[in-house]
Image 1: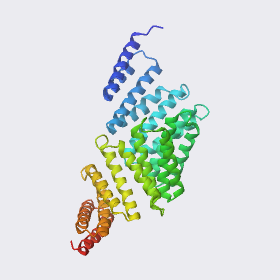
Image 2: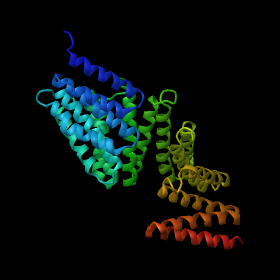
Image 3: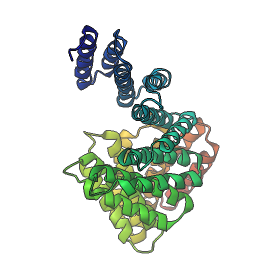
Image 4: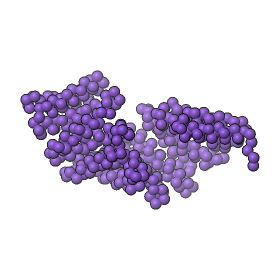
Length: 396
């Protein structure tokens, strides 16, 4: 069948849009897909395809460039236009695709906002989709929805401190893994294992349950079977960072040093790819985590060298986690630095290090006073007084 002039014009706009998207010109691509969809004489499904691509480009622009307005525009387009072009009764597969994409954008926007409205909407969208598209009808699609559903439940559950919601998040990931097997879809299996590890970590911390934390370790280690450094270096590094956090939590509750040593090794692995040049903020966050693990291990083993390495790691972190960029994270890292400096000063009897600890806590107290965080200011003041007493005791 020969294409009509309208179809040719629409396809020309769509080809231009694909080229723009390849150059990360997502706004331009969205406009071109809108022009393609508006071409007169197109059938309904062609209009749906182009409008879907228009929404996806808006969502991609919002994701890549942290533009929440673009995400809001994508959500509006899905809700007011795209879904109307794919009625559930007439085209259930296209309806399901649209619902899935809508849920993802709602989840992303909700993650960035303080309000929980969009996260709650995303949960409803995924629940609606799971009731309409069963595991038997479309197993891999069902598993993908379970995975995304688990992510949104986990984000909202963590934010609200809702244990039941966090348990539902774990259950969703476990359901996804019944279909997303390592043999059939290894990379998707690894992604869900990583998500499961995070959900178990949050739940384990909340419930102070080492069994859940052990299961988190197992899930992260499973992810690393497929997310290798050679295949996906950044995913590999992120997983090692997350693994290190759980190992530190476990290690701090155990008598021996082995688990804390494993945590330190995990963070050092992560830093092999999370370099300051490539991902400065991720590098800084991992340096902060490394500092905490070295601090715990140094205290456990009464090892001055490890405590000095902890100081260095925190100082590295503060090169990127600045008061201007991330004020609250800066204050917490500065407090961690002060704490390890105080331990080091006590062990070495070095008044100069005690003075550094006092200076660290002076900055922390000043910050929380200006920010009107009374509780944190009081905690910082307690530490500042201890550091001041230590300076005097050491003759500083």
